[in-house]
Each structure stands twice: as structure tokens, then as C-alpha cells.
Length: 169
Image (cartoon, rainbow, N blue to C red; front, side, top):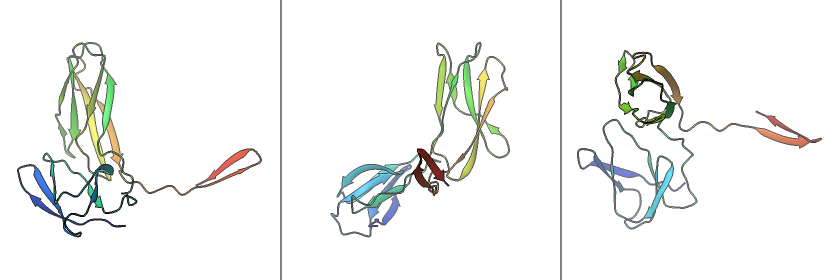
């Protein structure tokens, strides 16, 4: 695989400059962010902005036939129906010792709400709870996920005989 090595330099409060260091200047690079193709470019550097706590996997390749391994999104999106009497909901995050109050979602005039987490650490358990405000306060619904962004492929053998498909894992 013709992957590119980058030198990384902090250039601002949230800004980082990635400069290809393993290829000649002007070499076209296929840029991928978190496994998703961004562009083909021969620019001498790439600048990205990351808020505190965020992370991003940046990969570069010199050949269009080389692609990163598949990755699932590093965020959790949760949707829920608004319960009668609730004026808002907040999404709390478990810190390992206590619940940390999170973003407030206003419920006025809405029957359904949706919230998306910041980028989450890979191969880690994450706990959140959705807590109504105005009714049943403190009685939150807990969500626990174990995030694996790059799972191992499942080994399977498939055969078709006598009108039946057989899968062996």
C-alpha cells in the first residue's frame, strides 16, 4: 500500500497542519478522513480544525487503488419520542464516577428529538442517559454502547446445494 507519512504541526488553538513527508512535493495524494474519501490534491499541506476532545483519523495514499480499511462512524446518534409534560431533555454522559450534565434539547412543539455525540474513543464503552425536564426529572433512560470502529471481518463459507443456502461461520 502506498500510504503517506505526515509531519504534524499545531498552528492555532484548534488547528493542525499536516504536511506529507514521505513523498516528493507536488505528488497527488488521495485524502481520507475517518475512512471517507475527501479529495485528490497535490497541495503542499492540509490544515484541519479539531475542537477539544475531538479526534480524526487522517490517511493519505498515492494510488487510487489503495483505500483505508472500512470504519464505522465514531459518533452515536440517538432519537426519542417526547413524553407528555416534558419541556426539555438533557443528555448526560457517565464519566466513570458520576453523571455529567450534558446538552439541553428543547422539546417545545416537537414530538421527536435527536442528539449526536461528539467523536467517541474506539474500543471503549460509552454511557449516556436521556433525562426529561419538567416531568419525571431524574428518571433518565440509559444507553450503553461499546464502540468498535474497525471490527475484524467475519470469516464465513457459503454453499448452495439442494435448494438450500448454508453459511458456516
